[in-house]
Amino acid sequence: MFTVADIDARLRAWEHVYTNATTATDTPTETEDDE
Image (cartoon, rainbow, N blue to C red; front, side):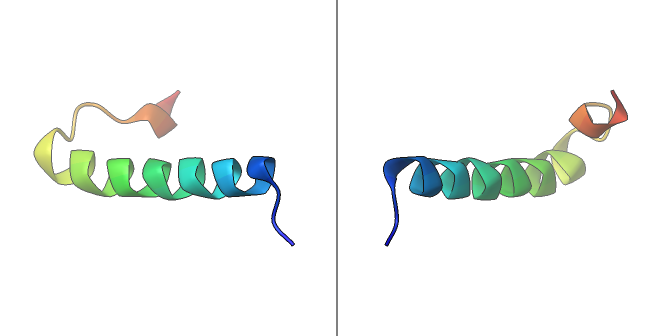
């Protein structure tokens, strides 16, 4: 059984991974993980 919080957390997690994967190739200077 999934709750709204679980689904939201999963979506945010995948969005973060996808964003890092795309920005890593487009703009190497913008890395959020460096902070």
